[in-house]
Length: 412
Ligand SMILES: *Cc1c(COP(=O)(O)O)cnc(C)c1O
Picture 1 (tube, helix red, strand yellow):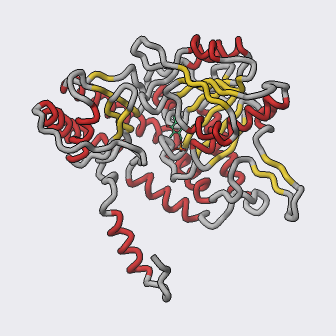
Picture 2: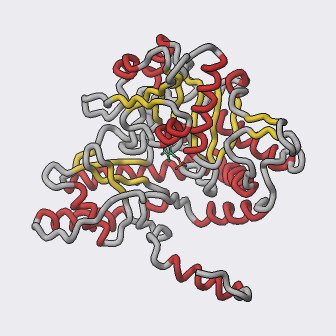
């Protein structure tokens, strides 16, 4: 591929782009339940316009763009308010969950260093179901990861006692998920808090996929257990705006209980040829559009808008649960939010995955145990019956020994 000598007409380039999308997963009509959150045309319209308004501006320059600095501050304020941030709690917007998690670990590590622990070989203790972003960040910072098996009672929850036993003097962080991605289960954060307090360990709650969902589910009457700063030992949280916050991609929040621990996050440097620079997160340039779109979506939806969308998602999940149970599946644990995983006692989930894929559904799987996995959006309310009919047909195909060639379920 070479750059064209003369520039092409935008009209033609645009048409080509739209044509290329024709081969992608069909998410606009609700047949995709991974990667994309489809909250409807109203939200999509606000995302586009609000992103465009500040697309050229740069969040790296709060003095040049006080507009963006103010919007980021208000986004963080809204997040902290939803997640029981105490007075003095603070945080920053990042480019995504991986970025938020990386920054939380960096902050915990530098805090530990400043406070004399750990001497050597820092480690992080987390459940087997915690997101691999922790491993990635730990790899970057030469921190060891200690994964601990889940409880064996069929709850798919982290096991606080076992995690406590895995902690030692070099543990800089213990992690709970709210919820975990593979099973959609909220870990027992209060119990993890008790253990972390006893061990004097920093507790991080990874609410990347639930942080902007669980508070509204609770307002709607879902019995969400304490999972946020309400639990006193929770030092930091990651919560993605570009998931169930329905904001444009490239937007997450990393939140801290106090300014005192937050101060270990920003990187402040004057020892180079350029002007001194202080950046809160990993990024230098920070896309203004991701900030402005998040601010706009939060303000246009409001609490009522989120409650309505998340209520629809919970209702959809319940319809899916009832439907798949009717077909013979069992649900893993007790999901409360927008993720659900289920397996069949007689047929391998990955064979069924292949058949549902061939019927035009781009969904996902969980590996431990082999299960089908859905991440639901408001749009899925329209397609539940179609999905269940195709799922039933897929199971029949597999049961009849007629399954087609294997379809590999991978993220990349
Ligand atoms: C999505 C997710 C992440 C990572 O977020 P990205 O935005 O994909 O980097 C981390 N933890 C959980 C639980 C997630 O669902």
